[in-house]
Image 1: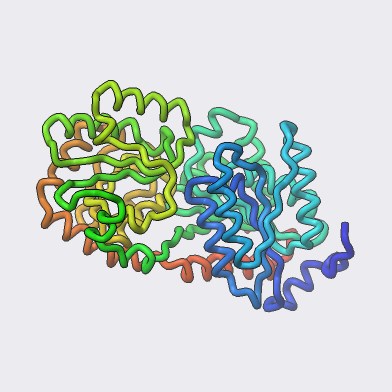
Image 2 (image 1 turned 30 degrees about the vertical axis):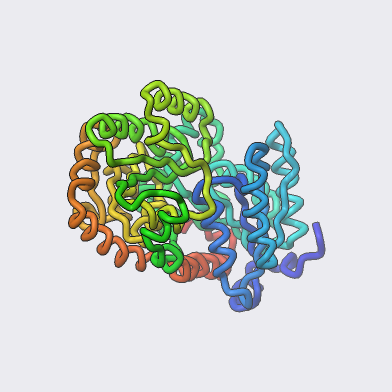
Length: 408
């Protein structure tokens, strides 16, 4: 291990120098798609640089998404952040060793891991480096039933690693209760810190101008689902609802925006749409880097998620002033306000989804009211406030003796 300035008495030094610059390392699974890389970017971007020097470790490269991953990596580089890729291996212990070496090389004060795999791999590595005074934060961005059922060993590790974790963050109350129940810790162990949005970036879009660029007629009604193509995001229910609405309405088009994480599901849905002769009206746009324009062009945003830990697309849609139909599940009722900024329906209920979508498509005044309330609500989710809360967690655990932290 390098000659670390805190090695002799790390806890005392952390307590007596609370305002010195601290080295914080974030750990991500990939630079790929979904909201977690965006959250990490915004945290690193907004943490005060006089107090925190941040760096990033990525566990895996996305072989089929190099262009997008490169763009995301470049955003970090443009702001002067170091991005390190851990040595990839089919053997988890080799990856753990690689991350541990990165922790030592960076001489980290705080290790902040994000979501399922980093919360295990990263914290295993961090536990090996505790003698330097390292503090460990685990950040939970979703509900993980599907992952823990598929790989029970990950949940077993989670339960044991909780004892060497100084702070745990959940993005919503729903996620806090989910994690606490499954890992077997008091819910008070988890701080609830929601995600943010750059509201100004989404609020300035103009429908007509956006449609002119995208080649969409002003008279067409446009419905969009934003999210990775996975079982979680409910594209299967969206396509079923879209097909039913296409059969009775000729003035509506449906867009799905997001990377095909589940390739089999993507191909199956493409085939369903093609067989129905609706490929021109139900479109798969893939990943986009012009999301402000996409939201501006839409008349209605639909989020038929089957489970949801937070849903950054919801606050983006609200910031853009768009009416929303979403599932009444997970954290969604915490983020939107049913009847005020969105219409909520039961998850997996295609009948209810069709009815809610059709009612709003027939009622432009109602869409406008929901959108205006959403725009006001979206302004409540600023990254500055989110980052201040995360920094407060860092300061709290840096002040506490390591031996006492896991019991708090």
